Every structure is written in structure tokens, then in C-alpha cells.
Length: 139
Image: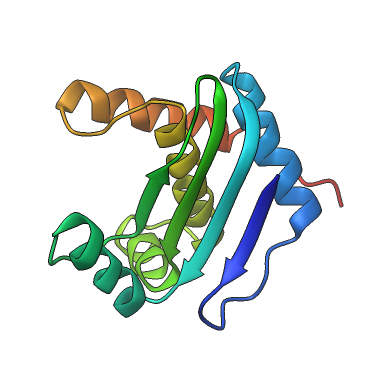
């Protein structure tokens, strides 16, 4: 089950559309879904979490807490919508594109992908693009 929670005034996502897409992303990595909670929050909220749990005194767009067991994905993914908006401007993409990148980024971390070394970062970016291309909304 994928759930979305809101600690700020971020407009709720379409649960059906996003659940379908993210579930397909998980399946494409040959993983099973247990329980993933996405929490949308402010920069300040995530900054405090970053200091408290990771001992990092910096702003970040995402923090992923991995509770996976074997091949079943489970975790909490916290996303700063303030940082997503700033990054969208910095990367010259729209907010929705950057949000999709961050959502997938969290899922990929739960799938075991890292982003510390240059090689890991390259693979993560490639996987992000691949998974973002799986998002299709029929109007």
C-alpha cells in the first residue's frame, strides 16, 4: 500500500494515478510492495528531521527511511515541497517533473540504489529518467 500524508498545505495528489504509477515502478524493479508512506512537508520540517535523525544541518529535498525486508519494499519517504519548487527552478523544469523525479528517487533508494559515488549517481539519474517515463495520465 502506498499512502500520501501532508504536513503542509501541499495540494493532495491523485491517489489512484500515483499509486498505479509508483506500483508499476516497483514491479519494474522486480520488487513487491509492502507499505510506503510519502510525507509532504516544508523545508523547516525536513531540515529538523535531517538534523535529528541523520545529524546533517542542511536542507534537502528528500529523506528515505528504509524498512524493507527481503524483496518487499517498506519505508517512509519525506519530501520537502519547498525544496522541490526551488530545484525545479534551478533545473529549469516544471514542478510536476521535479516532483516525479523525487518520488521515484525515494522508491529507487528502497530498491537498493545509492547515490554517493559518481557511478552510483549516474545510475540513479538514469533510473530516475527511465521510471519517470513510465508516468502516463490518460485524459
